[in-house]
Image 1 (spheres, rainbow, N blue to C red):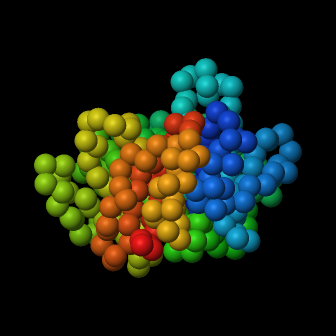
Image 2 (cartoon, helix red, strand yellow; image 1 turned 180 degrees about the vertical axis):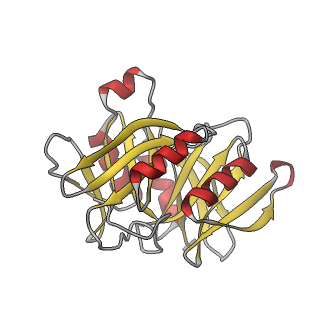
Image 3 (cartoon, rainbow, N blue to C red; image 1 turned 135 degrees about the vertical axis):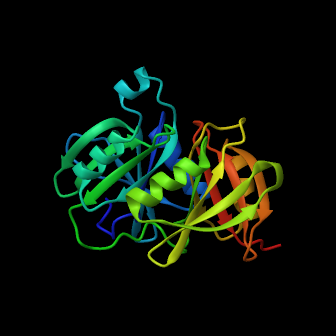
Length: 259
């Protein structure tokens, strides 16, 4: 499970799905992850491993969540110094608490919240002082955190204020508006973009590193998923794609073009 990083770091990624076994098989094929049982008492929770490093988890959507219309999707965990204080601050300015702060023994304290534009994410203080490796450039790790939002300006103000992020340069996207980069701890961690009004709902989207983007695209289709966009070249020479897994969760992949 996630470990402690500086306030505002992405420390873990989690897939909530309708078929955890099928999801493990799919992402094993596409991203190359190994899935194992977490062994957390009272939770049917599983880990995704990139080599020997745990980068995220997955589980079936809880019954209560399904009854309230929760759909398969990926969620990011943002590390914070004080979960309760952060939750209170988020709620005071229009965010929503979906899961109140709770402790999991030997893991940490966490809560599931939304920003004022109703995009969900977790905040967490891990019980370990070891830094998380979930976000990074290694194979199978998340290398980019991208927020699609109904109000780009308000979202940038919210996240920079609460998590110490810095607004970076803006890349024009024509009629779609600007793609605004976000920085944290001296590095670029992702971007915030306006929601286009169609396609998937506003949400955080996470891009995972693969060795060969075209091979990954082929594996998505062969394993029952759908490539929604790409592969498309991005600054730096790599390529990206956006896809939906067989249960309907949206994710991204980034990698080199080998042919």
